[in-house]
Amino acid sequence: MKLLLLGINHETAPLAVREQVTFSAGAIAPALQQMCDEIGLREALILSTCNRTEMVAVGHPQDLSRLGDWLARYHNLESTLLQDSLYSHLEEDAAKHLMRVTSGLDSMVLGEPQITGQVKAAFAEATAAGTVGATLHRLFQQIFQVAKQVRSDTAIGQHLISTPAAAIKLAKNLFTNLSDCRCLLVGVGDMIELAAKQLLDAGVTQITIANRTKANAISLAERCGGEVIGLEQLPECL
Image (cartoon, rainbow, N blue to C red; front, side):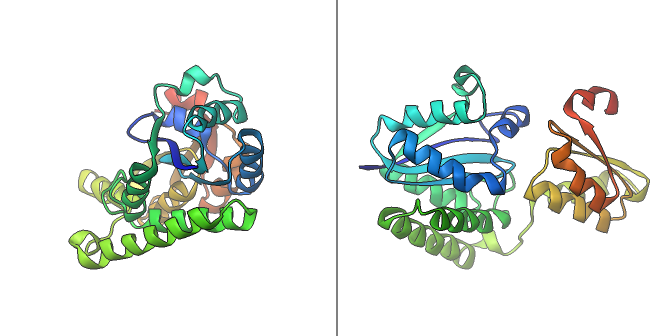
């Protein structure tokens, strides 16, 4: 049995593709069970954020292609849609990749702090679902230790800034008063929720949330006093 990793992220696919393979929090546990049963995996974990979806597993090397097929099938997509966007790692390369991800070294904004918590949440969810065994448990304890060391022993942890915070900082440099601006958020998820909160704190009062499934964005829109549109309305909104 080998350590396997298959994923898609902000460097390999645009948002329009990434959002089609995200997993909502409540869907991950049953998805893990289904993935393990259908492919015959011994252990598995799913990390799903607005910037990446990665599947970590203990299985045979040939299971990597099965993971890609399963991901497309689970989300009712043609496998050809994902084939140019997926990347894979085996054994030591998979472990090194996860260490980079968890430390924030593979993030859109270098060192952003949210990803460590997101990986810990993914590990906790897989543990609760019963798909973490001795191999993944030992691996992720090492990964969390490395991430802690990276933040304490290097300069990356001295000026923590999230992707939304970086975007808002740039917007403040471009516009005199953010309260006069209308803001558009695309998609839903932890990072979008953080962006909405920070936009409100910055004085923005007009927020529009675009999402493929409007129903999934309504709750966030209600909390931030915004409106919801479908992705097909993006051109006219812009």
